Length: 328
Ligand code: SF4
Ligand code: SF4
Image (cartoon, rainbow, N blue to C red; front, side):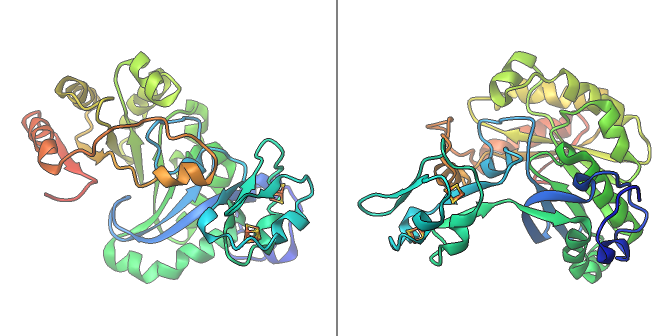
């Protein structure tokens, strides 16, 4: 290790052999950890959600993942108007209205002090600094389940590649424990960066949202050249499994032609496994909680039988297409 870290870290079994030169190499920002996941790779898995993303997908169900910095979520119905938060805010960003609490986000410096004194949990800090060893301690709680189910650990986000060195060390530590490792990625990262983690991965769940660059930009804020180039490169690596995931978003990419173009791309790079992830709006309320606008409105949820023709189309093209990766 090039950096002097705390005694307990240096002697922790998970920290040995990591590539560390800066603090952010062994400490990152996590916004959620989900155990017993069955949709994010084989078997039963723990999914670690890293904060920060390069894209701004209109339908994102984890808007709290997009900003790498911690942020404050407000749950007004829980507020009991005790004023404790107002007393500790160093920049006077909080006020009470008739029924609840309000934060002036242009003033808020995201210090989190208000969340520490809010006993009714009307204010919550999204994002937590965690060391590699802390994350691994969580992951290894279900070691037996992974072994029995063929599962492992999946690093998601946000975009896990955004905290690249932290991710790399998480993967190295996971591999040292013999775990099956996966990432869920938008693929929007330089090849140099992706190469840094490839040797520690068994599976990449790789989103492809649209083949048309302009349409892709409207949907996500970025064009797709880098993403498609990366998919082509990853597909050539024999020992690494690549699964393409298509978020199926009505009015944006749900026509027969749009989905067929993605299938054709997958076939062209010899990737057969495709997961369709139908749009849902379960994350809608989170936008209000963190003071963001939910920009796609009046979109109805796809009906399951409305997706069957796409599964059939994939099958006819010789692809293995499923909903969420579930066997049909
Ligand atoms: S996070 Fe800090 S600055 Fe922001 S409202 Fe709470 S106490 Fe004030
Ligand atoms: S501390 Fe919590 S409950 Fe009290 S006024 Fe602030 S937000 Fe409301």
